[in-house]
Structures are given as C-alpha cells and as structure tokens.
Image (tube, rainbow, N blue to C red; front, top):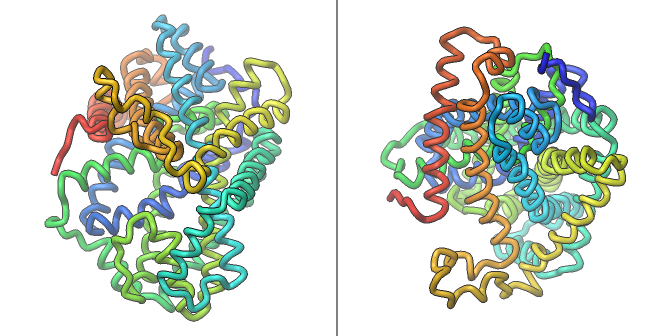
Length: 471
C-alpha cells in the first residue's frame, strides 16, 4: 500500500510530539509580535472574532491538506509532490508547489533570522537592566542603535542561525524532537508567568475587554482582509514546513485531531500573548495601536517602569526568542530534507551548507537597516515602462523586498496550490485513507479546501498585490 511508505528521515515518536513540533512551527513572532499589534491597530474584539472564524474556515482546512500531502508522500515537499503526482496520474508540473515551498522558506529564514537576532539581543538587554526607568525615547534610541550597527546585527543574526542549524543538523529524533521537548514546555511556562504578571501588575480587565468585547464599528474591509491573511500565515502554511513535519507523522495518528490540536495551541498562544501584552500596555496608558514598534519600543518602556520589570522583561524576550527558534527550525527543515535526499550527503554537512547560504543572504537583509539602507535591488526597473507592475517594488530595500515577495506573493500562492492539489487532484480513496472521518466532516472539509479556502486566500493574494482593495 502507498500509505506504508517510510520517511528516509525518520518519524516522530508520538502524535503529541508532532503536535508540539507543528505548534512550535506555527507559534512564532507572528503570534507574539504581529498578532497583538495588528489586533491593536484594528480595534481588538471584532478583529479577534473574524480572525478566529478565519482560522476555522481557512487555516484548518489548508493545514489538513498540507499534512495529508506530507504523510502521503513521506519525503521533502518537492519529492512528496513528485511522488503523489505520479501516483495519481497528474502532471509533474504540480511539483512546483514543493519548489515554491523550499524557495519561500529559504528566503523567509534569511530575514527572519535577523529579527530572531533582535529578540536574542533584547534578552541580554533586559538581563542587564537596559530598560530600567527608560522612557519611550530611550527605548526607541536603543532599538535604533541596534539597527544602525551592522556588526552587532551580524553577531546576533549569526547566533540565531547557529542555534537553528545545531538543532536541525541532529535530525528528527535527536535534534528536532529533543529540542522541542524542551522548548515548547519552556514557551508555555514563560507565557503563563507573563499572564500571571499581567494579572497582578497590569490592567487585565481592560485587556480582556479590548480583546473579547467586539466593536463591529471598527470592522472595516481592510481589517477583515488582514484577519484572513494572518489566520493563514500564523499556522506556517504554504512554505512546506507543515508538509515536511507531516511526512514524519506516524500512520496511526489522526490528521484531523492533530490539526485541531495544533490550531488550538497556536490560537491559545496568540490569545494569551495578547492578554499579557495588552494588560501591561493598558496599565501604563500606552496605545494598543503602536504598530510594529509595540514589541521593541513600547513594551521595553513598560517593563522599565513596572515593579519587577527587569526580570519580567527578560522572561518576555526569552519567550519571544524561544518562539522564533521553534519557527526557525521548521523553516530550515524542508530545505535540508530535500538537499539530503538529492545529494546523499550527511545531514550535518547539508545543514551547514544550507545554513551558510541563508546566513549570507541574511547579511544583505541586516545591512538594509544601516549601510545599504538606501539600496533598492529593483530600483533600476523604475523607469522601464513595460514593467510598470513592478513599480511598487522598485523602492524596497533587501529586507523589505524579501518580506514582500514571501508574504504577499509566494506564501498565499503556495497555500492556494496546496488546497487545489489536495482537494481536486488527490483521489477520493487516497484522501479517505489518510482522513478516516465521518461523511459529514469529510464533505465539509472537502468543500472548504476545494472552494472556500482557495477563494479566501486568493482575495488575500490580490489584496497584497494591490489588485483588489477594500476600505
């Protein structure tokens, strides 16, 4: 039977480990950094309600599809798609889904590592008391000084990539599984400590009211699109990470149940992080709509002026760093898995070479904040009339160009193709073998993955490209 394939990279020891691994992939800076600030920008409760609805209607169906493809193929995303297309008598052109996933993860990690380096730096800053009695101008100056020093950024970028490499190089059982067995419980412990801190020293009542009392007057078309997009992105979909983790999932494990567990953990972390952050923000009358600076400017200011702020600032940025590392290893794993299958070289050698290339690209991303701040790689295309559609990209620096290309183009496009291939190209017997669920549940999932999710993500894609706009 096809389902008797074994992964050449090994498999998770239990379903729980897979859930922790996939949740670790999903739980990253998107939950602890992006979700709170976009919830703040778009009014809190109403945005959260739409976000939760989109998790159910978009995120979960596509995650089920991606895990199904991974476990069915039992290889890296490229080779899994190649094998499945052959099994089902479909065009080998569908292999592009795997290639896009590898490219997307490769590019994402190059700049994600820079941001992960910021979080590591802030662990040290907090431990040294750099936030103590600091006002907003002090913390803004601290963040600006970090960005303006290429050598400092390079050191933290290097450390982050070294941590991710060291874990992935050791393989599924000895590397990923052992690291996640330690990192995920640590993440939850740190998060619980911060929520407790918010209850004691923050304004938790205001945070709960802001996040869970919907104000539909704040719900604009733009807010709905942002909620749709974040529901898709927060689960690490569209870049092969969940697919390759699914390739290591034991045959006896239920894909539906594990997906619900993963989505539940991811959503719980986002909600708890939001409560912890907003309780602190409201206690000091800081605006919840601070935007991207909420994490690295507003919160350090808050910690610096609260009882026990030095310790809890350290705990918070340790939490951010752990979340960044768990996502980082999931992004690197698909690329390393494919390179091992293709080259036949040992995993440590492949992981070192791949990490070195990603690290090198990351240097360009970190230089975008200082020495190459004004360098726009596509700037030379600004005056080419035939390429007018690239005009919005011609002014972007390397960091922003990598972020735009992956977030606005490759990730949503990959998600659409994953949904279409799983929903329309895998045979019913194959799907039912991997998804032994009730007829009603299977039908509901099939409708969602064939129609609802692709259309929703297409809208997100068109909005990101500037083709479709809602006010």
